[in-house]
Amino acid sequence: MAHVLLGFATLTALFPVFWTVTTSIKTREDSFSDPPKIVNFEPTAKNYRSLLGKQEFTDVLWNTVIVTVCSTILCVTIGGLASYALARNRLFPGRRPLEAGLVFVRAMPGIVIIVPLYRLIADLGLYDSKPTMIVIYTAVNLPFAIWLMKSFFEQIPIELEECAGVDGASRWTTIRRVVLPLASPGLAATGIFISLLTWNEFIIPALLGGNNTKTLPVYISGFVANRSFDWGPLAAASSLAIVPIVILTVAIQRRLVSGLSSGAVKG
Amino acid sequence: MTAAARSRSARRARWVATGLTAPSWLLLLALFAIPIGIGIWLSFRNEALNSFAEPRFVGLDNYQRMVTEPTSGELIDAAVVTVIIMGLGLAVQLPIGVGLAVLLNRQLKFSRWYRSALLIPMLLTPVAVGLMWRFMLDTDTGVINWLLERVGLFGPDWLGSRWGARVAVVLVDSWQSIPFVMLLILAGLAGIPDGPDEAARVDGASSLQVFRRITLPQLKPVLYVVLMIRVIDTFKLFDTIFILTRGGPGTATQTLAMYNYSLGFVLLKTSQAAALGTVLAIITLPVYFLWQRASRAVEA
Image (cartoon, rainbow over all chains, first blue to last red):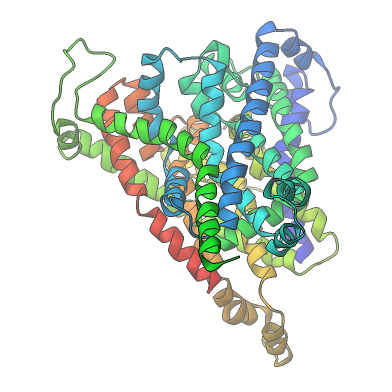
């Protein structure tokens, strides 16, 4: 009984992914056939060829990669410093307001700041520039990054650091030799998690970016605008967006589970 | 080390900690505090990108507009839609998430495989999967209605009817969020000792009784956290609705966030959008206190 329920749930969870990937290698006729062709179709690479042959699409892919990588590095670095402080020092000046600010920012709908932010970056002449987008993504994902990394730092026994200190290691040496090696799997998982959030981000590049900063989700959403609904290339673009995520999610799931869980359970 | 020196070094360590948070402060101020300030300022003006009227201060006009027709009607409508989608979403996501977590927690054969597979929807690009769902939900050519027909059900006009669209939004959002609920509940279950429920089983309690009387009460703090996160995230929900329905048909799926978007970026009424944004920000203010309560409950 339990296996039937879990099996059904698994099927439901995976079916849309399966359908996206198979649609991306079907011809137009096959993707609309009645009854639908589940596996009995002739695979074609046509959709991918037409997509990857477009300069616009490869630019978009490149934009997405650059922006994701830069903002993830920035976010993990800045967030890492803050989360180390939060994990190790219970009473420093500004701790309370920082925690409150992070929760508030996490809870607020994005559109609330996007309306005034649009005005601000337009007035400052920063519209449609990659650095602007990188900084905005970093700020938006910061609360989540800090929340996760704090839980990873807390999992490292503070005694280890105290011992290193007693043995005469400087603070900096302790961090480099003791803390970072122990924290690195957690930091890597956080990095991957944040990069997925950035990769998926839609409302910010859609509303605050232009052609220079167009990312994959914005490109994919463009298929709706031109009404024709070219499902083959659309499914191909979607597959390129989600297949890496499926692989990464499976690869980091153990860390992810431990980080998210202890983060959530401890608040 | 003397007491004075120790307290000096503790004070120094505290300021070092503050220093480590400085870059985070800078980002939060530049990208949240300042825009919110600008938003409040805009909300007292009459700026609109589609009007040639001289921009000037109009006091509380934009707020007053919210409580007078026709804007008040639109606002109430959006609030009701938000509550409907939130209510339906929680009613679907919490039971299924808890159910799956309980099943996985039994450590059956293949449990780890199930868990890996079930987590996948959580991190997929909402825009991409939203569009694929739209493809699958198509009334005439979609695979969902074809499958429903196989089992003798007549699929509704999903995205073309008011309730069909609402259910579709809840369905797609639930498909992506149930893994998250499951994950946190699973963590909660891992923290519950096995003793009491084994004792109850030995005494002849059924699985359902054990779950209701023993497991569920102990899960309460985690459930509270999950509930709060889901309320927050449904309040913020944007991508899925934007891709599936754009708030339509009519205003059937226009939540407060979608309404705010439409004021600012479709109707181009910057100041009115800023006023609504300010109100939404105020609504989210108490979350921090709820959050603290939740984390205290978990620690206790």
